[in-house]
View: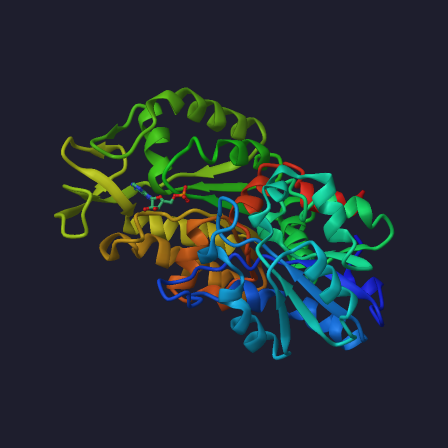
Amino acid sequence: MKTLNDFNFKDKKALIRVDFNVPLDDEFTVTDDSRIVAAKPTILKILEDGGSCILMSHLGRPKGFQSEFSLKHIHAKVEDIIGVKTMFVNNSIGGEAQAAADNLKPGEILLLENLRFHPEEEAGDKGFAEALSKLADVFVNDAFGTAHRAHASTAIIADFFPERKYFGYLMEQEIESIKKVMENGEKPVLAILGGAKVSSKITIIENILDKVDHLIIGGGMTFTFVKAQGGKIGDSICEDDKMELALEILKKAKEKNVEVHLPVDVVAADAFSNDAKTQVLKVSEIPDGWQGLDAGPQTIENFHEVVLECKTILWNGPLGVFEMENFAKGTIELGKSIAEATKKGAFSLVGGGDSVAAVKEFGFEDKVSYVSTGGGAMLESLEGKSLPGIAAIMK
Ligand code: AMP
């Protein structure tokens, strides 16, 4: 893998694809700057070598030029976080951008305008990629969040730097973390899959059965499995058309010697509301009018034991409706178990969507080994797909 440490950037201009697609409030203030912070080590390494940085990113989903999606809104924040004065140009290609890039001195940073103001970006247009490539000597991809897209700046551009293309530190960390779970994880390896639906996780489950010793299935997905096995799930969320698939997964898991752990009890509610009446019920004995919205106490204990037995842990998806305080306990307790296992030496990776939000909200971010920055990109990696942004650097 070609990483930044393989190259000295002295007197070189590096075009860095970063993921500065950060949330903004109504006053265009950045409300979560973690993606900018995550790109800092790569930028600093290049500056410290004596090189210069040209930062390019998308922001939101503009249709052509739309001022509200301008990267000028995050310019000051970038400067603040990196701690280096940064120039900004109103376009990512063209005369002004080219002149600014040509005049860039070692130690300086240039931030380009939103790449997606050009529809050619998402179309993966070669001409647009080539125009971007003319700005610099070296290409660095540090945008894991868009690595699953074959866009001009994430994948196509790499062809214009056949000898000078590298992964940034963030990309490297993401790739290494996935490898630690999917390729060379210390046994026993455990995957915990929660969330609402089986249908959105099915490809992950199928791919992961060859790599894990234990599989915990939780959250709303549980009930498709329980109903398929003849259990009564009341009004719990269920995908009837996926019941056969659920049985197939259980059969395959058995053939592959993967131990599957499903909840045995749930916190059931008489409505999908934080104020609903609740009771703890066996997972397969939920009467009509009630729905399982969180893992029950016995389940939490069972899962705790499994987690502490394992040396490699992947967590994707909450164990309950954690957005509602009264149904967050299962997810919080699981986070605690994973934190404890990590402290004892296990490698833990949290990735893909809502489990990342849960980990941040409940303060486990620093207590697990790695929290992925890429939702869709992480999910596609776990599904076993090759990501265009990664493949373009490797080839
Ligand atoms: P996902 O994006 O697939 O990880 O799903 C996350 C969502 O699943 C969250 O919004 C949770 O509220 C939801 N969820 C988890 N458990 C349940 C459940 N038992 N019933 C309904 N929704 C659930």
